[in-house]
Length: 242
Image (cartoon, rainbow, N blue to C red; front, side):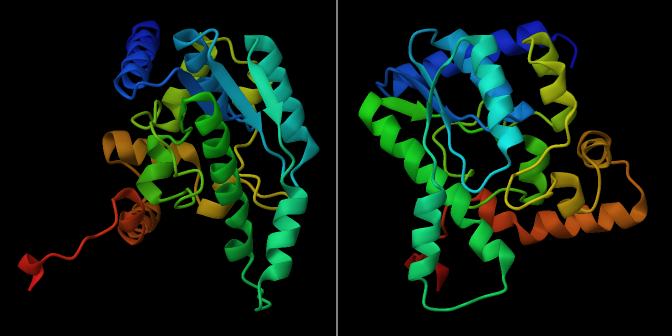
């Protein structure tokens, strides 16, 4: 990234224009304690100093995540609200008729509950929901459809992970948040890179320069193809399809 300060300024201007176009008052986002949500928080605060709300939404989550979320909130002086969704999740799962060993099916309920919560408070405050997804995650479909992928705007969606980290340092996000292993917090000891099967450095190099070890190229290409539906609006049947 050649001029990170200019990039951040452009994102802030873009956020203001999108909120104005939608006739809204500010921005709301999930504050997970990770680097992506911290960057979105910092940019949102710059765009709307008085109309920014971060939601901390633990759902049988690691207590460390909540600690880091409060750390960045204090650092940026962001208004936050904590909504513990653990009991809501438990109640939902208890209502499901079928028992399953499919951990991902159950785990994906968590980001979808968070999406519902974000839109509830967005409606109350007349805010837009800002997502924290980056280009690296989007490329391989590493997000939950209608979960963390269910947002109004994606301010860091065109930046790979290393660029987000660069923005984080410029925005003075605490180093401990920038360097800790990224995790979606779906289950205990879960990390992004362990689940994807490769590092963000490998993924970012492939996205930016088309370079990666052959076995990782194939895996990334396969993940990209399989997740194509997650990056598109729902397909609509028309008579022209006949």
